[in-house]
Image 1 (cartoon, one colour):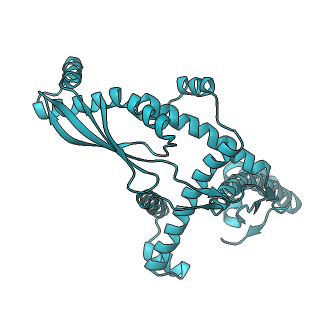
Image 2: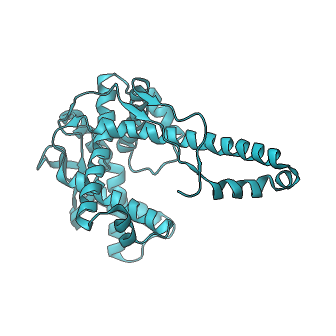
Image 3: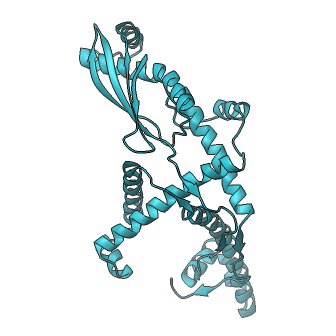
Length: 311
């Protein structure tokens, strides 16, 4: 497999054109024909063979690009078949995004409160009915109050742990506000649409109408989109900021650590050099998030739970 072209229309937006010889394509065709449930139609066979050839042959080119151009890819490559002929081979394109030139103004000293959700009385009563019904019916008034206080504290402990996890994510969100510099437009757009899909799924899961949501929030559609776009971009900057923290604080894992993680990894695989890239960055990002957490302040929640009629 041969690299024909590499370029960046804008910093961080990587475009590649590469080709495979007729011999490489034919080897992939033969492998596909030998596989169970081999495609019968020529077009389907060539498509499967091209996919096989790319997954097996593009990995060295990807590693070469990272090494020669000092790239830090942050997305999987998207491939596009440009031309294919069984007698000549094929040409294909790949697009992926890498870390553009960015500046990290600060990454320590953030402050984020831990805010557990209040407990609804209905939630409290349902919990008691499910798990403490006999105890509740046998108790006098003082015993009922003591039971409700105990169960409220149990619920509150769980919600405090959940709120702490959310607060740690907010630290990374704050970090995103400190990452300055231009981002590739298509990378930002892709993250916005991903954020929009996640929002839509939450609305469906909670059976909430979008128009009702806008009414409660006091927003127009345009205001909602602008806010969601800004949030998506800052989340993206936060994720990229973790890589910058890892670089500054030398938190990257060793090759042996990456290899050990790869052997036990059950995630979706692409091709070797990209899989190693994802695992390496995942470990580094976790370490960077822990570093930011250790050098920031999470203000504790109130000691006692808050029980309300409704939330």
